Length: 163
Image (cartoon, rainbow, N blue to C red; front, side, top):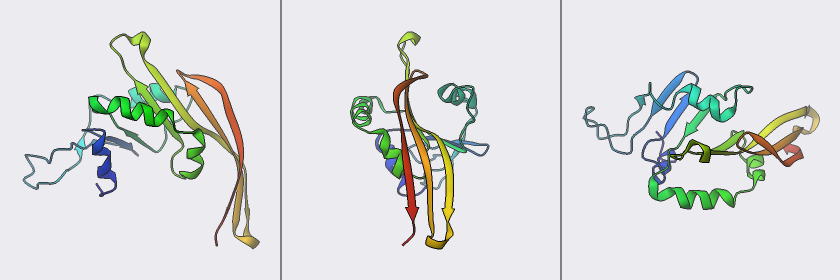
């Protein structure tokens, strides 16, 4: 993993990556059996499974190419909740590779479990203007809580131009 990715160890002891058929996790402690002193990927067969991930996205939607799962350290749950509650859905407009950010809270009582998400729900009317090297399109952002789309769906006209 790269040095930038290692910053996830501030909030999680075992980040998971599901990407193009790969199911791996990292542990913040270097692998004792490898004799390398490095953090190495470990194949994942048990939880979370792709079907667990599908529950978050819903059965009607296709899974994204890459999913990162960051189970929070117990002392980081409250600070991360506070930070995420301050985040506006519009942040996804400027993170070109991120299409959905969801937070799943699992409690002892399953009735108290929650899933909150902000997502780019669609991109339409994509046009490329070659004479000025620009792309334009419309993005739809939505916020969901426990699978119910809230009234917070907005459309944005995006214009990207290389200088």
